[in-house]
Image (cartoon, rainbow, N blue to C red; front, side):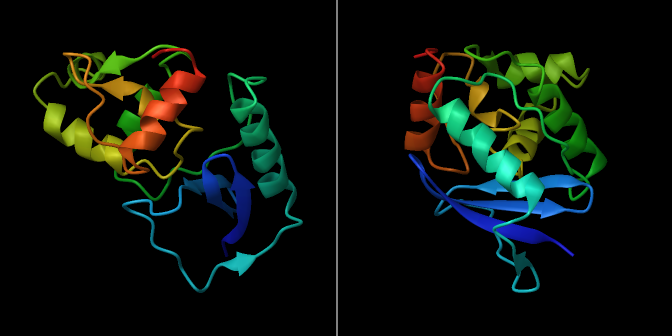
Length: 159
């Protein structure tokens, strides 16, 4: 059974979702691939959700660069999970092109598939899909909204 919390932030009301295995979702308002499940239980006292909210607030305040949370990425395909794991290697304040990330996972021709997997990342911000940009430096798409991607990269002093 998944639990959730709606956390007010400088990016709007974030939906934080946790399973028995770890944090399973961080979704912006109007997140492109977010599907709220009415079976989830609202639990504003859940220790993991509270810890995630605290760490997100510290990140937004510029006081945290690396999240320390158990994560549940089991909802993805093996390829998506591989991409999400690779995203975690992009350091704070840096960015990587889709092509470079595809090479990193030894699938240099899978740029479009990698982009799709990146867009399906359920743990926005915590797994930093916002740090992936086009080879020419353009920001391109972001499931949480292009303006939020720009704001996150500015927060990390990349832009």
